[in-house]
Image (cartoon, rainbow, N blue to C red; front, side):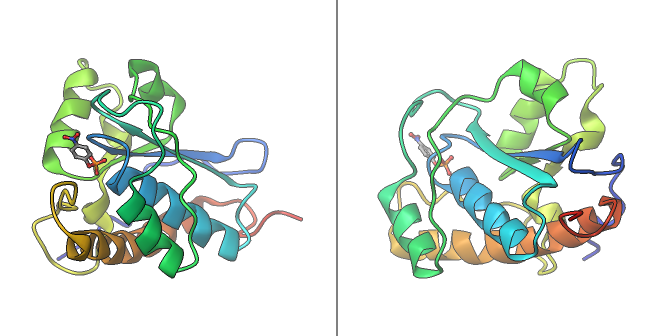
Length: 179
Ligand code: 4NP
C-alpha cells in the first residue's frame, strides 16, 4: 500500500511551527495516544520547537477528562506519558491546525462535514494514510474492549506516527531545532 509522502505544507520554522491535531471520537483513548507518541518522537528527534501537537474529539462526552487509564498504562510501558485533557474539536481548529489527523473513517467524515466548503480538505487525513503496514486504514476503537485492543492501538499509532514524521520532515527548514 502506498502511504502519503507528499504533504502540501508550507515551510516549517521555529517562528511558524507545524500545528498538528489528532482527532478521535472521545479524545480519551486513541487521539491522546497519538498526541503523546508523536510528541515523544518529535522530542527524541530534536524537533520540539518546530512542532505543536494537540488532540481533540468529535464528541463532547468526556470533555475535561484525562486519557483513559488503560491508554495511559500502555503508553507508560513505552516511556510515554499522556497528558491530555479531553476537548471537543471546534470549527476554528480547521483553520488553526496545518494537519488534522483522524483515527477512523467516522472521525474523518465528521471532520469533512464540519469543513462544509471543503476549503481545508488538503489538511485532513487518516492516521493510517501514513501506516506502512497494509490494513483497513482505521485505528480500531479500544474503548469497550480489553487491554489487547489498547496495545494494538499503540502499535498502529507508533509506526504510523514515525512514518508521519518522515512525511513532515522535508518541510522543516533546518531539519533540526534550528539551534
Ligand atoms: P476514543 O475512544 O474515541 O479513542 O477516545 C472512545 C471513548 C469514549 C467513547 C467511545 C470511544 N464513548 O462512547 O464514550
